[in-house]
Amino acid sequence: MRLFKQLLIVFIALALLAGALMVFSYDIIKIQWVGFMGLQPSFGNMEEPLPVPARSIPVDGPAYIPGGIAPENPVPADAVSLARGAALYAIHCQMCHGVDHDGRGPVGNLFQTTRPADLNSVLVQSLSDGGIFLVISNGFNLMPALNENLTVRERWDLVNFVRSLTVPAP
Image: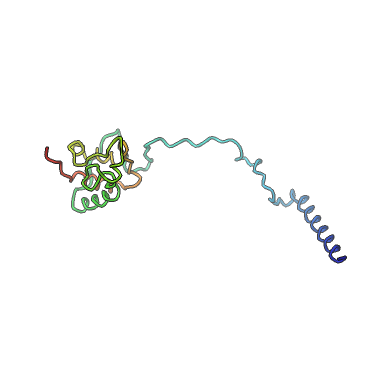
């Protein structure tokens, strides 16, 4: 028991000595054992970053449309473009616009205020290619903007696919 007390006293003495050395040598060797966050120049009130404007286009964005003019379709409506457009429609559009392109897809049927557009309608088919491209890119009503999900080429393939749909007879 006596040996235990002696070892305990020696251990405590060494611990106190080590602690004192750390405290007094802090200014000399700059041991960062306590964070001084309040002394940093970046601590305190700062301005929040400005929000990005809604529907803004990045400076290097490939789909910039000067003056709001509807762009012209640079992609020919060949079999490859139509096949890609059909595949993209099945992935991104069919759940709302439906298999028959009439706005009665499984998700489109859940909308209570505005139904998705009937892509076979005279109204949609009378739009220019650039107008359809802008709707796909920026969205309309409940339709989300797909400009971040699809490349410019993929959006033009979708335009060619929508344009290939037939207008029903009156």
